[in-house]
Length: 167
Image 1 (cartoon, rainbow, N blue to C red):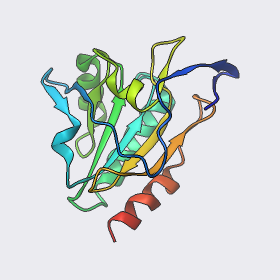
Image 2 (cartoon, rainbow, N blue to C red):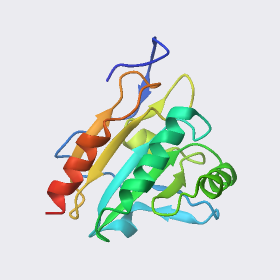
Image 3 (tube, rainbow, N blue to C red):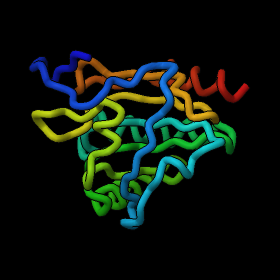
Image 4 (cartoon, rainbow, N blue to C red):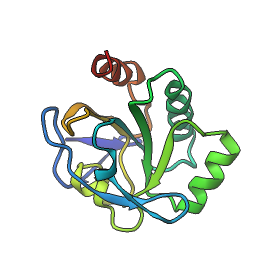
């Protein structure tokens, strides 16, 4: 996958995830520093909203938009914003922005999500922007790697994939 940041080409580390793949299991960190384990989400429809840092305008829009959309989805759907920001910064952001419906996890410690899903930017050690939707059986049903990291994800396409799984 070719991605760019402000027009400059960057290298993604890890295996590019594709529709039909079994979603790789990974561990990450919750805002309270407890361990997040993707295994705990079996049986749910999961949206991973992936962003470089919540401290940028486009990333904030992405987190706020998915938080708002989460209120319109069933309880079978969980949305996680994934960044490498420290959990403390994520917690401050969510409190300041009123993010209560979508959850946030940090990949700062081991970067397991970034490597296993192919979103880790080698040169910056940040995650690229994108979305992954996983069905109740743990199969990837939608993937978007945003080619220009400074652009927004395709919210409509991601939410359409969720709605089709939740019908």
